[in-house]
Image (tube, rainbow, N blue to C red; front, top):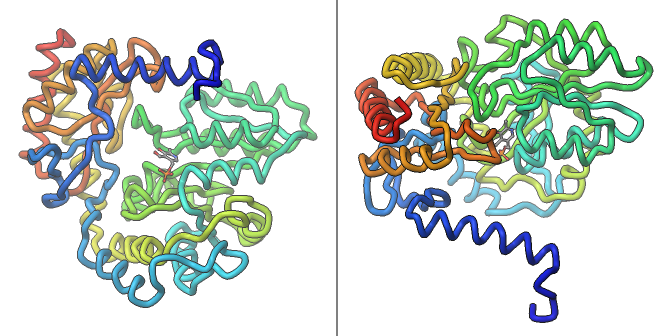
Length: 402
Ligand SMILES: Cc1ncc(COP(=O)(O)O)c(C=O)c1O
């Protein structure tokens, strides 16, 4: 690369990031990309040879390693091998994909569903397929990066409204020419804060302004609603959402994403979205694991009750020790630390005491709002939760947070 000058912007950007990472590594507070070498039940993992309580997992129902799901993935490999014959539209579709999509549609109370190879790709492709240059897309300020990227890629007028503020959304919709097609996109549960979108008011505002509504259920599938069907079940509003998006990489222990909705919408995405047409299909093992994941949720309803009970216990226990958890009511529990340094210090102490949790610092969250982003799952016992919260409190006291 000697031919690239030192003041080249790409070179400068690479150097700046590497410098930041290396500084944090030199300070001994780099906690990212740590390889897990073993699972020990649903709530513990082995990292660097140490068994640690897992408080950073997205496996909200504790389904990673579930014997039925593992067996389904193995059987799919025996039957179909490890890959597909290419993109879905050409030779890549398996009966398994269709079965998975029919199951998702039924689970979500929709006519049909379509799957993609990641949740990220699902948001990117769906938003950018539905809206374009002459349209407008409205996105909550705390939406996930994949939604933001989809909005930017679409070329539509990109309007961001204040977090979970329906008056602000309404005002911004009212300012838009009413002949413009409008799409409103929100997370159901916000991935850094754990709070829930105000769906009843959101639906009212969207309907009043003839806007399509897309909701990302990455962190609500399996977590919200009496049977884990998500935010519509939570609010008792069946079929309130036009475009029901979810991932297959969190509660569902696989990889991929889906859109469920009316059959014409799904047919359109199958024939128009670039991530479907120009990217290979979900591998058989992952499609089979996802399919079995939905069946296990239905067959083992105690898991949904357990994650909801554990979330309540965890939040009350962390708050009871004087730590700030913002507005969370779900399995994502931010433990506010303040500065990035305090977040690193608290993480180091938690790891020293064998609690695996990760810090989220700026620019992922606003400066001064650095936090431990803790998660709780159906697999934790009350004793494990109590121990973790005691460790967080000790770490908080050491770091001067409480
Ligand atoms: C709200 C939200 N949407 C989408 C995604 C992307 O999903 P995936 O990791 O399955 O690509 C994530 C991932 O963290 C997320 O938190």
